Length: 588
Ligand SMILES: Nc1ncnc2c1ncn2[C@@H]1O[C@H](COP(=O)(O)OP(=O)(O)OP(=O)(O)O)[C@@H](O)[C@H]1O
Ligand SMILES: [Mg+2]
Image (cartoon, rainbow, N blue to C red):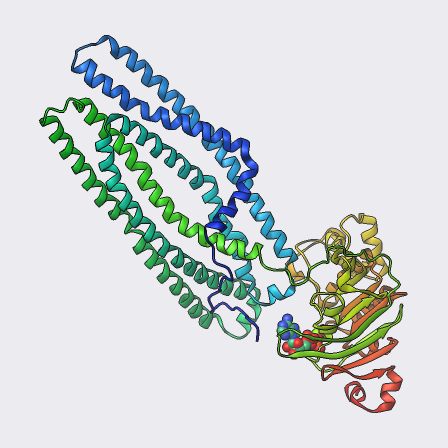
């Protein structure tokens, strides 16, 4: 079996994130050059302005207090008010621009991942639970949103602040600045080491949380089965266990993350003590470079140094989570498309409907061939019924034609053009598929029909419904065509859902129709209705019907009995009955 993920299995990320991957976020940031420039200017202004007050403080201490020069006091006071005003304004502009940029970036990432999900082949969805797919688009991106709209800016602001403070400190006393750096460098190194461990743990936490979501989604989708088989208590136990797994990882992360604070504090207090010691020693030894004003200003700077530093260490911690989020998001955005369009793909247009399977072989999982040397040639307008035991490969034959999966060997052609040489869009336009269980979206009946062609008018939708005899049951619904259907159509019978999907196909008007008939039993009256509708639907079209009902089978031009990786018997109903073989047994 291929790599099939489940709720009890941690998802493995195919690709690891590295600095290059983080740099990739630049691709999302760079389009906002103007905003970035404005923000950087404002940041610089705010940083410089916020650091000027200690300078003024030095004037107050050394000139106003020590030299008793009170004229300067008013000047300094006015200066302080002005600086405060500038700082508030520039910070405001900064935060606003950042919020705007963050929002745009997240919108782009969200759109990219959504688009990818729609392009990904069935194979991708076969291999992981729905919940794990959903969680990537929702939760992981929420984490990123927070990062882009807050942390990126704060990170930049703090770096700017640190640089500016350093310049200011150097201008006051290079020696004291050196001591500060002797403290900061080892401190940040330790913070970084702690962080790299954290990233791995965050990835593990993500996997555990996504197991939980997968189980949750599975339980909601299978809610009827859960109740029917009395699984509530057992499932509660499973859920608790899955939750505990994730809680344990969360707790170890939280313990480790808490180490950051003490590490920063220890280094910081040691550094401060050293500075006081050295300053005192310098003043005592008669060094006139160091005045009381210098020491006060310097220590004020130090505290405006400490704040950004501890914030940065928090952000670094946050970065651990963000990079593990990015890992998962990029993993999806980069996931290779199995079903790809050729560069110069042709457009299929109003095809006649000649369909040929040329000696195809196919396997879902490398080693087990489902079809081998399957050869079939269908004339335009022919109706082919596919019958055979369950699991024989009837749906698989259809999957080759619609290119939901690609053949391993051989080829499928429509009007002598390989399906791999045409655009997916035109292929899906020309080949209309009716699934075993048609999906109904939450919304009105008419909008559900309109899914067949988005620009169809109300009149066209109603005409389509009338054409395949769906009008009668729709008019019986409380609000007729405006009746709101539930997701997955829980208020409709299987036959009614089929009729809605028939109406969709009428609007789409493809040249080839593929129908995987529902196995579920429907009453004879509805069956008759569907039979009539089907005849209208496939008139003058090439049709492939995976048939379970004798009525459908009898009306087809040719019947294929699929078994043993290929066509075991072929012919009309009469021919096959006369043969008294596999089909004969099935029909009886
Ligand atoms: N997505 C998949 N991945 C792996 N194996 C698959 C997949 N889909 C089907 N199979 C396997 O391929 C074989 C053929 O399946 P297929 O769905 O074509 O059968 P079928 O003839 O349509 O059966 P039914 O009448 O029950 O619908 C089965 O053994 C099935 O287990
Ligand atoms: Mg099937």
